[in-house]
Length: 283
Image (cartoon, rainbow, N blue to C red; front, side, top):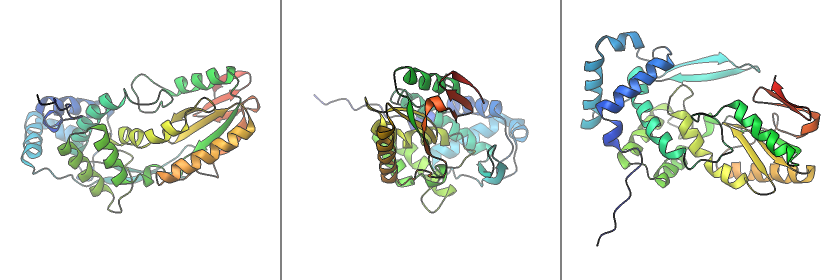
């Protein structure tokens, strides 16, 4: 008797279906945003939704689909500096949203409970509540960490291996690889502005989450910002070294300029929250 093969994650036949593309288009409309590099905005794309989605479905299923140009620009970051945004064309955002939704459903069940960014029903406030929970249990020291230029340094080959390990459909994997290569030919980087990047970012950091969590160290992570909570300064130093080593293994670096050891009762600002011995409040 042949063993039944597991159903692939994010099957291409599903993400490329008219139903999936229509649902993805509705999400793109709700998210708003301007045109991609082809200059076509949501209003223009909506003039003949049935026709454009039908053509997109046929392109995907025939193998003729090719991604369009990104619209690249920079915006000011709240703490200073610039954030580079790369916005895909509307048609590409639709397909990427369809893939992201399918991946997210599979990935969310496997993700660490200490990871809060880009997840349904979770927020900055939930992350802050977990910090306070651990503080009340005696985890009063923390590594306040930041991953240096995280989105710019996500390695494509490693990411594709993680997708394969997750059981993602081969055709869907090739589609993701096509997008990644189209965005950055140097083999690294996720476009900030793509609906797919958040779920890929969380997948890429799952090995880091797993490595950092233990009885001695409690992790709270939101995208590339994280806290490693410990019961002593000495263990916090050990945790920082372990984090640097694990990040290096992923081709990433701890941002030394933004990262520090801190005693919670002395206070820190994390994700726009003031955390201290007195409690937690909005910064």
